[in-house]
Length: 260
Image (cartoon, rainbow, N blue to C red):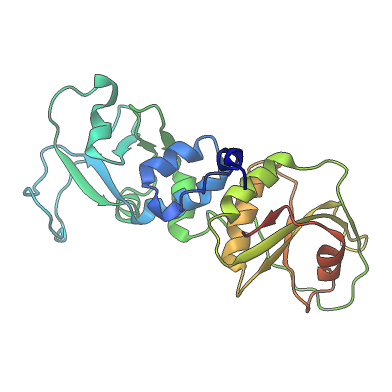
């Protein structure tokens, strides 16, 4: 190895577990690969809301039934919420000390169902959380409401090959997502058409992985969907000896992602 090779090595990607919710929010603003993790993390994260004239004493405690909490909202009813107390004072919009409360995202969203939340509204990176979006997070459907699982119960003749248009943006985001999935060994791209299904030709991704890949395909499908039109879709299958399409991926295609 030459000395110059030291400068050509890629930097290893930081594991998602090391990211704070605030970091995920910033990254998710421009990179769809981080959005699934953001949605999962925000429910368990401790969020800050502004309060006014509440009956709660300072310090950590479990709220008793019928405790009154007045949450500060904007004139349009939207509720500001923050990832930390520092974010309250971004850009100097809030200049004085304020009363606030900390609770998990899940408890907050359940407490104020039907509201629109503005996450870090004074910061460079923020996000509006709409009522339907919040409800889908609480129900656990935020990653799955546009996906479905199909079981092929009989031999089906399909056409499979490589797409004429390479989905560069999808591939790049999936690479980032897959780098944090230790059970994934390799990922392959294909283009498939089943004339009997009534569905148009579309991308299909083969995932060579250990164990169950349901959670992996949910996040990968959610990520890919960020780049597709509303009516477009992609397929994900597990590459193994039980799947007839696996031969194509294993014998005819170079993986676009391979765990080092």
